[in-house]
Length: 299
Ligand SMILES: Nc1ncnc2c1ncn2[C@@H]1O[C@H](COP(=O)(O)OP(=O)(O)OP(=O)(O)O)[C@@H](O)[C@H]1O
Ligand SMILES: Cc1ncsc1CCO
Ligand SMILES: [Mg+2]
Image (cartoon, rainbow, N blue to C red):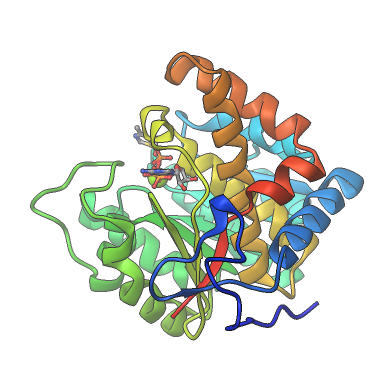
């Protein structure tokens, strides 16, 4: 389904959470919402198998977020298993958070096997600017044609410039997501991937069009690996919509953000938000989703 922007929609007709900001246009009424619901329902119906080769910190949250969405996670990373397993998955998520020389060959082999079998794969370039080793690993992985790349602003800026940052904060961002929109466009153009920059506003681009997602909760930054988990959710959404990666990525980020917004209402801090985030994603219904989706095309 193609979603066409409706420039006539004004803040006066939008619902409270959906007021477009300067430079943003809304789509007609709740079409993004219906799209996000349709894709979430597809995940719940089909339970796509998502292989994750990810860091030790994120494994638990990532697998639980996938399960809560309706997808089926498999945290396999042995090089010996890739040729048997990866060609049969619905999508693959590769995350370099705790990269080591033992795992990089598995990541390369899995990305190549997925690409060869026509399965979409997504890359999370965690702390790519922390070392030359990480940067070179990511640049090599980009040659294996990810369908999508999701990182925070510092990661996307670092990847595009292939540079290490003096103000390096490791896995956390030291930039705003809006600082990295042009970098994301250029990365999308050079790789052919849909690129998402997460932050207070998430920006998603195919190199031409930019979509902004304004769902989420600032407290997510106080739970480790929420970025890693949303990258895996992106893989699940692309698994059920491989030919519409831009829409799939935007919908995944919005759905995750909505689960966080609902979770925050019941949480007392990061630890309970982690639990309520998973519960809210699991129980997310059509009404809650439609009333909260906040996705805009960004001029
Ligand atoms: N200030 C904010 N307000 C609302 N949502 C936010 C904010 N910052 C981040 N998020 C949301 O938190 C999630 C994680 O994004 P973030 O940019 O923190 O990832 P990350 O830095 O890669 O995290 P990690 O490396 O810990 O996995 C995304 O869904 C994003 O939309
Ligand atoms: C904290 C941390 N360090 C390496 S990976 C990771 C999880 C968040 O990306
Ligand atoms: Mg991250």
